[in-house]
Length: 280
Image 1 (cartoon, rainbow, N blue to C red):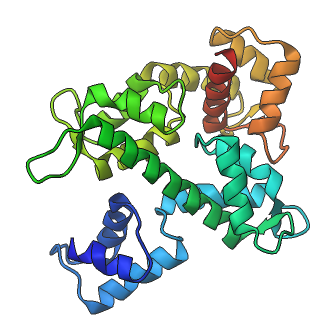
Image 2: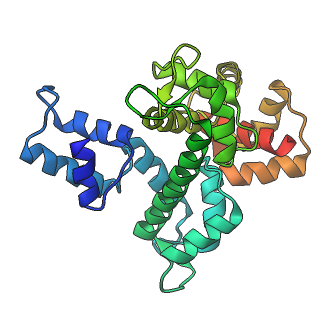
């Protein structure tokens, strides 16, 4: 579109779902058009959030703040763990190359701006992999825009690095956003929108989410929204997992990055996702 080309001329190329969110925020009269002032507001939003949605930006920065200590920087060597925590799937060589490109002064540390730049480059790497995968699909829509069918999802997710892609969970995430891939294929930008939602739900199915939430409430005895890490083993056994204590403690450390000795429900979901990957 003209607006997309305009943003690209400013060196910005955010996914369509990011632009849609920014437009919705500034288009207060909901007339579907933006004037010069509103365009400047969109530019400011994209600048402040580094081209991510509000939710993405918040989750990324929450992780950054939980990892920094005395200085407002994190060690480069932690980026692989950060990407795994955030549910990205990128090979070690690609991560190392991206970090090296961003850490220009070779300090071995990243400030918040460099950290977000790394995440942007990860996203760009995914776009490249996605384009290659879509080229293999070779299905053209009526307007020469590649479309993605339900049967294409597994191959594309594998191409993005998800060796166990949990297609069922992806299709359920799509349904939550109003996309029924069993009936109608989606455009590439819509695939990205669903991908972000799939990551937020830790690539878990609806059945998994219901069971995890139910068990979490059982052990959140005080209603604080947290369970003690001492109760995690019991919760996992309720969910059918029999895990060695050493493995369990290692996974808890990966999830409880703030070392708070307690987990929120979303962290228990993350722990289950890590367990699923560990089992495989």
